[in-house]
Image (cartoon, rainbow, N blue to C red; front, top):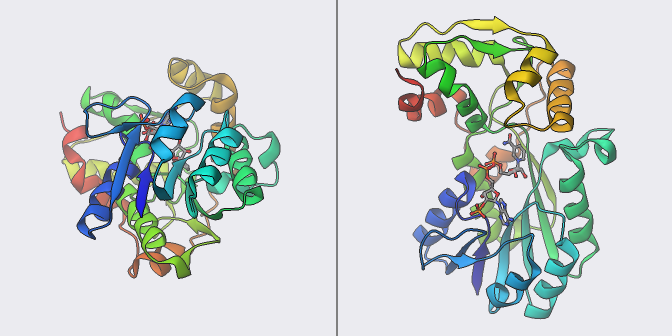
Length: 273
Ligand SMILES: NC(=O)c1ccc[n+]([C@@H]2O[C@H](COP(=O)([O-])OP(=O)(O)OC[C@H]3O[C@@H](n4cnc5c(N)ncnc54)[C@H](OP(=O)(O)O)[C@@H]3O)[C@@H](O)[C@H]2O)c1
């Protein structure tokens, strides 16, 4: 009864591996680029890594990589896997999901899993609290944070809550076989997040209101054009509009999710000059 956790270097997987071990469950951490010999190799873009890592596995925590998902599912069926928990995205719920680059690969993986003779559970988070780390370098440098839509709302979810939700679903079969839309406990604007970071670090943090084109130029090295446009469109659609908060995190972990302020306290060093 081994649980394969893909993406072992990621924030969610790292927390999940620790939680499953605390519960005494047998875990096989796997990464596309293992950093030490205790971590197996599972590169979801390389089917030659699938068979070996799936041997003896009953459940999987899966990152959404669609390029070889049919081959992955086929090997999982052959290996006798019973349950796959997918780290998907609430972007799949958007009306334009098929055409939206933020949603499409998640949707393709969801479809492949739904069609497979394996029980699957979709975890659909909105924005990760950790996305705020993208602001750490200007804040540390004492520079203003560039925001195209300062009053755009999101519902940042703490990655540790996401890991707890995944652990709950992996440990309790009665919770499996459905989709969960996972949000943080409160809607908050980008400017509100900056206020919290300012309070927590005791530093003044300025906001520079930039145009879409200015933001895209600034982010060009990290975010490709279509993804940048999709992110900007998503921010625009939430500009001044609080996002809807769900109760799915509480339902899975038995308490409300951690606030963005709690995340900021834990990560204050990453923003402190
Ligand atoms: N950030 C958000 O707001 C957000 C919102 C909704 C959904 N999501 C989903 O959550 C995922 C993680 O987001 P993140 O922001 O934490 O990204 P991240 O820090 O860049 O983490 C990427 C993760 O993907 C894994 N990965 C990358 N290439 C892989 C491959 N070829 N095979 C297997 N695993 C691979 C990495 O694990 P290894 O390097 O160990 O292989 C790592 O765990 C996203 O990919 C997305 O599907 C994110």
